[in-house]
Each structure stands twice: as structure tokens, then as C-alpha cells.
Amino acid sequence: MTYNRRKHRSRSHFGQRLLLVLITLAILLLLGLAGCAYLGYRITNSSTSLPNMRLDGVPVGGMTRAEVARRLTEEQWTGLNASSLKVTFPLDLSCTLERTQAGATRTAAEAAEAVCTFGHDGDWFQNLGSYLRVWLKPGYFDVTLPAPDLNATYIRANIQSVTDRFHELTADRDTTLDRENARLTLVKGGGSISLDADAIYEAICTALTDSASQLNWTEIAGSVQMPDFQKIYNDVNVEPQDARFDEEWNVVPEVVGCTFDIPAAEKLWREARPGTRIEIPLTLYEPGTKAADLEGLLYRDRLCFMTTNYWDSDDDRINNIHLAADKLDGIVVLPGEVFSYNNAIGERTEEAGYKWAGAYADGEVTIEIGGGICQVSSTLYCAAMYAQMTTTMRQNHWFAVNYLSMGYDATVSWGGPDYRFKNTRDYPVKLVSYYDDHSVTIEFWGTNVDGSHVSPWTASHEVYDDEWGCLIGYSVTVNRNILDANDNLIGQVQEPTGIYHLHDHEIDWPPEKLARDAVLAG
Image (cartoon, rainbow, N blue to C red; front, side):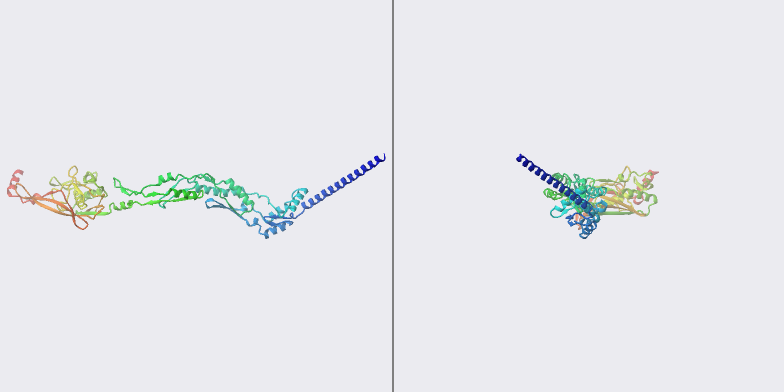
């Protein structure tokens, strides 16, 4: 019995001691909880920042809001200095965002408010946990400010201006041949690359939040493939060609030879950044003869001119001369082409403006429509001889004319005699005709390549009547000596021979003929 009582007392004492321990622990727990609650209360209601804190490298622990703001100002906190954010892009593009307009402005007071709010905005125990996390951390605890409420419309508008300009600069898919500056230009990736506006927006928001002053964006979206330089070469490469005259003697411009080095072009392309304009040097080969050279050859020289007078002509005859001269002015005769006077001035009619005037017809002096135009054809014939044209059809007047020496005239009539010449020179000739109240002038303009010129001389023989042996006229032939630039004879041309008759009153007929003619006429 004694043993059992001792055993019971031992158990009773153990239970008492355990209860005492539990009570003590409960009291300690309650005291700890009360202490934590009290400490959490003190922290929550404290007006100072938590200890051991730092903002962007500036110590701000254990300070009031005013002290934090003052310290940030004194330390020239970066949030105060970054008043704008400059963003650079490929192709030397950029935009600058003002932090105020972007909604990313942070004043020292705003930063101080955020610092002093940290660890004070939860319940007592949350604030106590924040305090312990900051207090127990080795070194400083870096405070992260809450993200600002950014102005997305303003930010995206700036991005849009850049992406639009980038698209404008890189939209060209074509290769441009610039012969004037001897270069071939193309845009690397033209038409297939772009800037990712959404990705740029996220990067700018981060930079604004981090108070950065500069952001360099280098990423380009899209694929960039090397062009087929061999195909471009086949399109560009051309041999030089001299300027020339076509069949109508219009100037066909020269072709400048052009080529480029394919391996060098590919190297330039590989080394260039996407979106940049590449300039590939061209090698140009100038032709020997250019259009300006040929254009300067045509009608550069006055080959000859001839002027005849009509002092004693009436107004109607002068009218006809002027009409015919106007028709000739500006006519171009190509090498090998035959000029026809009748075709050039057309039929002489009253509807065409021609008037009745004195003329030679069928060996008689008469009045006919267009009288006087033979003076223009004769002036033209005389000028054409000096211009070294080849006469293909020419008939002299029945009687000598008073405006040119015998052998230098050419009579014409619609449906009858015509005056024609062939341009046997190497270049075209142009007729220029003009007149005043007393004279008409015809010029030949062309290209005198060798300086040759004409010196005419006349062979004249008397013509006698076979029956009576009287002088009735003269046979006249004009010969053209062709002289070189040094007046050496290099050729001779004989013009068609013509017979000029004397008027009846100029012939010394014997009395026997006159008597017979009187009987026959009687």
C-alpha cells in the first residue's frame, strides 16, 4: 500500500509541474502576441519609414516624409533628373517623351509618400512582418515604387509617328538606277520589315517606370532576304552605243554603257543594317558620239544664199512671189531625196491666193495666174547650184529674164516644166526663204563637213537661124567647179544647156523674110 501511495504522489507532482509549464508558455505566448501586436501597432502608426531602406541607391530608412523628400532632393535622385525619355530606333529615328505628358512624373514628395507608406499600409502583423524582413536583411532593402498610371494614348502616338516614318523609309521594294550619280540604290529588307509597336510600348513603359532617360530600340521585325543581284545585273548591264540618225534623220540618243560588280554589291548588302539604303557604285562607259554632237551637225552651216530683185514688178506679181517663197521656207530635203518645186508650192489658183501677172508662156509674153513664181524657182535653182545639189530636171525660160544671168534660171508651170534637184550631200539641207518689198532671198542650210564650195562659170554660144543665117539667140551652159577648202579643184559639174531666144524685134531679119512674112500674114 505504501508503494502505491508514493507512486500516486509522484504522478500528481508531475501533472502539476506540466500544468505550470503550460500555463507559463501560454502566458509567454500571450505576452509575445501582445508584444507583437503592440510592435505592429507602433509600426503601423509610425510616421517614419522602416529602417535599413534605400531608394535607387539613396538611404531613406527611419525618416519622416519630409526628411525622405529632402534627402532625395539633396542626393539628386534620378527620378527628379529624368524629365524626359529619349527613345532611339534604327535608321536614326527617335522620339522624346515628356514624362509629365506620359504620366510618369514622380516628385520627391510622391516618392517620400511611397517610401513611408511601405510597411505601414497592412494590418499590424503584416506591417510587423515587413519590418522584420527589412530589419533582418543584410545590407540595404531596396524599395520599389509602385508603377505610375501612364498615358497610353500619348505614348502610342509617339510610337506611331516613328513606325510610320520607318515604314515610309523602308516601303520601297524596287531597285533604283541613278545614272546621273552613277549608283544603284535599294533598301535592305524594303517592303518586308517593320517595328513592333506593342513591344516598343512595353519597353517604353518599363523605361518610364524605372525613371530612365534613354532607351535604345534595335529590334526589327520581318524577314530580310538578299535580292537576286544577277537578275538586277542582267537588267542594268548595257553596252555603250553611239548616238545616230534614223532613216528620217531624227537623232537617236546615245546609250551610256552601264555595269556593276556583283560580289561587291553582295558584300555591301551583307554589311548594311536592315532598313538602310544601300548605294551600289555603277561603272559608266561614255559613247564616242552623243546626241548633242549630232544635233549640232544638222543645219549648222549656211551653204549658200541667193537674192534676186523685183524693182519693176507690180503688186500682183510681188504677191505671187511672196506666196511661193513662204511655201519653201523651212522645207527639209534629206540625203538622196528629190525635191520638186511644183509639189512643194502646189497648184497656183485664185483660191490659193495667187493673182494674174505677167509671165512667159509658149514663147510669148502673157498674163497668167501665178505669174512671177518662176523668179522664186530660178532663185532656188541658182542657190541649189551653189549648195552642190544635183539637178535632175530644169528648163530655162524661152527668153532671158531680167533678174538673173542666162543659164541661172528655171521656168516652171503647173502640169508642165518642173524644177527638181536631188540632195546628194551626206546630211539633210533646210531651205530658208524670206523677202522684202524689192527682193527675195533663198538660203540652204546644212553641214559642210569638208569646206568645199562652188565656183560657177558660163559657156555661151550664138545660135543662128538655119534658113536666113540671122542671130536668133544664145546656147548657154553653166559649169560648176568644185573647190576644196584651199581652193583646189576637186570636181566639175555641168548643168543642163539652155537656149535663150531673142525677141523678134531684136533679130536683124533680112528684107526678103519680112516681105514674105507680110504676104503670109496678109
